[in-house]
Length: 259
Image (cartoon, rainbow, N blue to C red; front, top):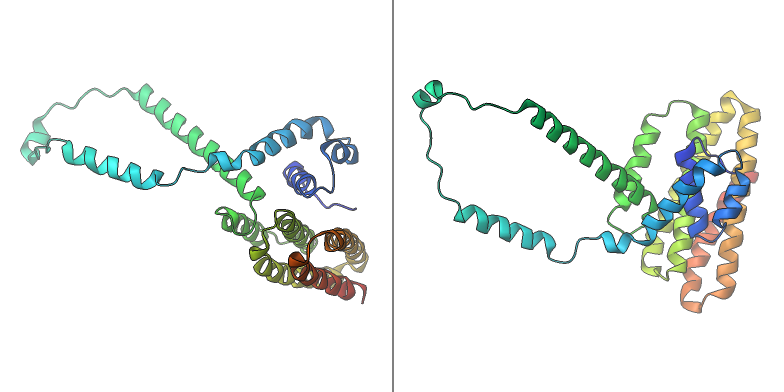
């Protein structure tokens, strides 16, 4: 299958998708990218470790309510502060400030915020439809597209996002999370149309490049359709209608690409 990564982050995200959906193992994926294997292996292993422990990172039920109650109790128990008059504020000697400590505290806060933000972004990339961080994942994708002005780069991103949507649905099927599949299938259908429109835009300026992207897109959709067909033959009847719906969408997309 032809992949269209733009940088190491995209390679890591692609590896997670393919490993989690069963398309590749860690070793087989690294064999496809030998020039990056040494740098990618620890990154992918760390991301897989984090993904497998996502449930343990969720706040326990009632945590926020309990914290809010404790904070209100503490505030009520504090003695009232005497308001200082304007005259007193003017003539009161200012306390000595530890500038170094303040700077270190600020730097520590910035590092903590950066660490939390990085983890949220990483976990959102691994999230599935119906999970709390999935909306963050979609927002990040829209932001990336908003700052992409090259038609070819946008087409590659749209194709990559289509593969992301199909991989999500396959994982939902594997998890037997059928209730979320109809909305995910509609999202995939819209994504296919966006990808086709992006390919048409590339064709206006570079027909040869458009043909190359078209063939790669067909390869991607064919692979995803093959996986869905295997699932259709092996999963119980209660999953059949959902798999058939997604198959119809991928087949329709392939037909439009081949026209």
